[in-house]
Length: 204
Image (tube, rainbow, N blue to C red; front, side, top):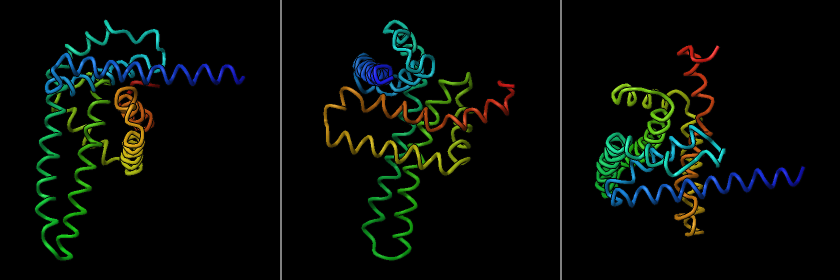
């Protein structure tokens, strides 16, 4: 029993490490600037396809996904970056001004940034899970984030915790941070994806 549990634990750790190394490899293939978005989406595609079946997660399949995801991944990633940059700039301006109204605006802008990040995570996952056009993907991601506030909190808190642990243990940046964020988001949204499947008639 203990041996089986340890084997399962080591397999999960290896999948996390393997996917995170793939993330860095494919990010470098895109010279970082054009590689991060497609690499994140590739990590999602591989995990959605194989979960913790580590033998099926191959570099060859990852490279195929990376090339396929190059345009869509960059559109999703840089669309989110531009949105967050605009919100962050407005937050910077808002915190310079005293007053209860501007304090409320500060909180609203912070929530909007969290909401944007969670919507991005939903977008990556749903795009890996369904064959869907970009416009409909953005609509579905937006609706999904609104559909369940607890899911939004779970993703936000989980990602924040991963980043906090990474801040304490910097080696995770190379070996686990990005894959853990994607795997956590996949796990946290499982119930919602099942609901979508039922509404689409994909499961009886």
